[in-house]
Image (tube, rainbow, N blue to C red; front, side):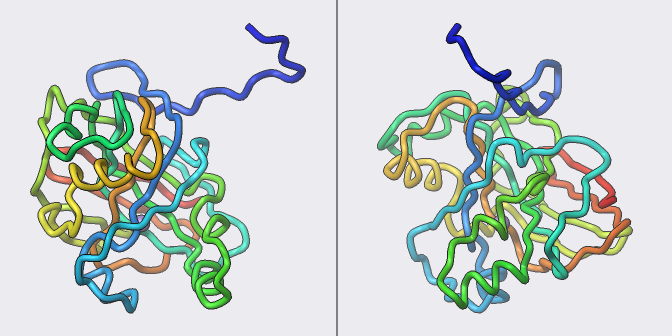
Length: 227
Ligand code: MN
């Protein structure tokens, strides 16, 4: 054990269905991975290579209460399938990628859309629009050993009981296996890495006190209040 001069930070972790906790190493997110959402954001849904951004590992937040972030007047929800890697590698062939998956969860990629729009127009980085504190609420992880590798199923989100997003995992432009294969050409993936796989259409603004509930058939759910 090195002689650390301050206490080492705690490892962020997510509970696993059936017991135990999954430790988080890094968080990768895929942009524009559903055609209808790509169109609603003004993009071309033709199959370009996927692009990625990141959030810090401690952006993960588990549980019923998520603090409303500072510095935004247009906080958006993006409901997403989250992949949790139990192993990794570089240049992983598509046929082998699912062997690296430990499990799956439902998550929300909270986005300061006003700051993101400004970053896009000024050609600046997205970090402060995507990677802020508590920007990655996530539900419990369902091990692939229990649920398999879902390639289809409804992915939906309600705000205060009203339907906002309603898509299907089969509508992903880049399925999970291809995302892992492509990402592993850019970085060496490792156990503990999470991948947020993009959102279906219907993203929209959130207010203080809103109750957000997301569910992915065959995977799981999450529910929280913005306080
Ligand atoms: Mn997203």
